[in-house]
Amino acid sequence: MTVILGIAGSLRRGSYNAALLRALRELAPASVTFEEASIRGIPVYDGDVETESGIPEPVRALKERIASVDGLLLVTPEYNNSIPGPFKNAIDWLSRPPSDIPRVFGGRAVALCGATLGGGGTNLAQVAWLPVLRVLGVRPWLGRVLAVPTANKSFDESGVLVDEKLRERARAFITGFAEFAGSK
Image (cartoon, rainbow, N blue to C red; front, side, top):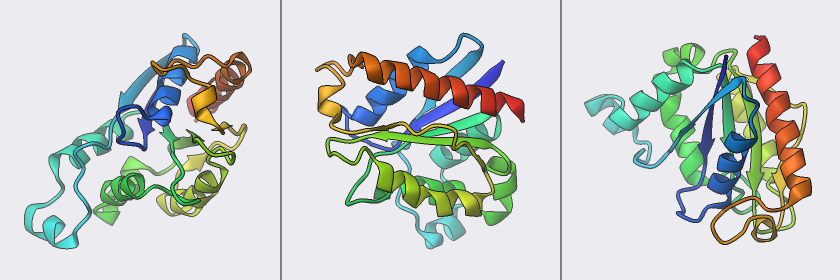
């Protein structure tokens, strides 16, 4: 059984990225155990805090979850044509101490996708993540792109993915990533 952990990089209650993550969980193949995690509760990175208090509990717990799965799915918003600060901050904490990077991220299958109200569909944020993923030593899956523009037209008021063409693209995306993550 392939285990995928999905993280939405938005803290907003009505986040389209959280809605996309839920849709991907629903569309995942039956052979996949799909888990979700949150970046909520991760403080702003501060080296002094790390030195004085160590790794905060929400970070430690998320690191252990990532280290235990086959694949990590990062569902990223796009803020000002790039990576959202809270999501990058979480990854910065998750990479501390640097000696933990190989255990947590090294060789782990990682896929990127995202949703936005704008027309670019998070393409720029996904590209901005690539140097970060390279430093972490992950195994990026680049088999398909899932970048959802004008997300307010693809999801209903309760966050359900209602665009049928997008549902099929999302199903192909998560199926492809699951095969990649399970292939180690």
